[in-house]
Length: 169
Image (cartoon, rainbow, N blue to C red; front, side):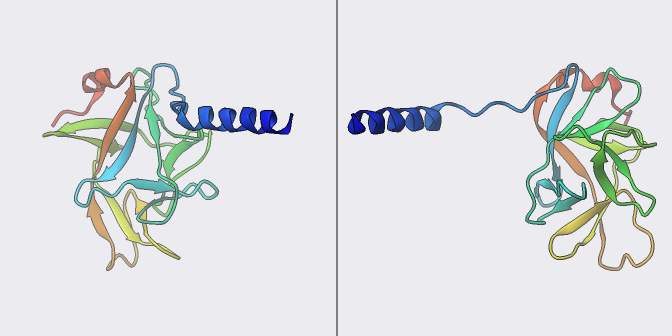
């Protein structure tokens, strides 16, 4: 009887290992994607507890969605938190409360860029303990900061329609 239980357990584990993992849930009507620094290709990562977004920050990779048919222009993260620019400029996705920022996608050559309040410019600055924190704009000591753009990739959902709502070049 014991070998039979082991066989059943082994078969169950083997089956689970080969089945594809569930695709991330895409909210109805949303276009979902990963974000990448256009100059380095680094993927945007997110600290789940603080909601801060990083490049090369030893955090889990981020995944974001915009419902391009919704006039509120909300950027949501994988945890259904609304993203916003904090008063100090930090890009953060912390809770479902909608912030004052307007988000969209903008076609620029072969790239699809994330835009906040009409601008595709973001700033990355050294973070602690590692990586680079993302800001919409950075004031104060920005000597070690650099301007970047973020391109959307790995599209899922209703992304074919984003060009109708994208900003004009």
